[in-house]
Image 1 (cartoon, rainbow, N blue to C red):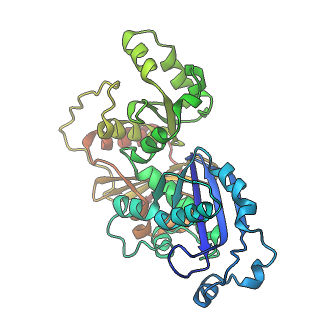
Image 2: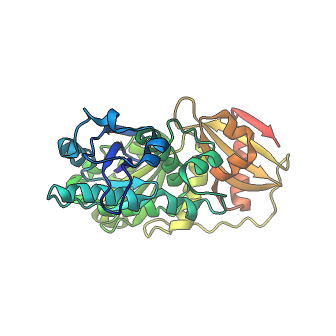
Image 3: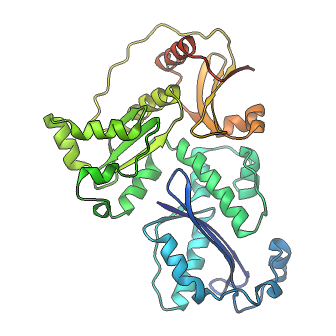
Length: 360
């Protein structure tokens, strides 16, 4: 579970700043499940340049709650969560400082979307939130206000989770949580799984992915796995501590993602098949987009084939991201341009009518 946040402050000397606005979105890796947004009376002056930047003045905060009045709500919404922020060191430091002033030790693991973006989307011109979102076609409203920046960070984090094919983010979050609180029995691990297409990941007590599965119904496929009685299945069940998942929306993404992530993660309980396909696979068109059903109403899955090479896929709800190839390439989760993957795609196109094919 993640608490994605943004904080606006008064500015001023290091560790003397006060919070003027805070927005926190509780995010389960797929959707927002709770939120907390509030102006805050910092009980100190706001630097003039900050007023100009954010539009938040002292007059606006006169009747706003002081930090101690909202501290319990912040603790409650971030309980058992990993903090996520753009420039997380700053936001985490500000929160820790405010709680320290109250005599409370507030410590959370924090994930920085600046660092993640630099690792997963290299070579962009800038990693400042506004410019980064512009590069990715993510709309940002109310820039330099906590709610607007936090919502943009949620959208950015969704893309980063999809690009994180080795599951480092999810594994660290799974390890951070107290897994024994989920449930002592295997049934408890299945409660939060959806009845939707996708890929699921079984983690051990270190958060490491030890098995990857797939299915047209994630919960049903995971349940069937936990009902197996072979020695190998029993050993997996014994080591299983938590289960995470990624919805895919369609069979093509499911199969490609499943194959790719087994190769990347090498889970100990998956049997990795040797794939022998040395003959070069060619598409009828050299460069095109496959637009298929996404994970929810309004969303589309997009696969990019360029110069007869399979580049990868992404999810988007925005037409301009599909129509602007440079933005689309930044969103793409890269995958191996193997003949096996290309043959999967060709076979799918032969057997299924996709929503749209766009020649480039």
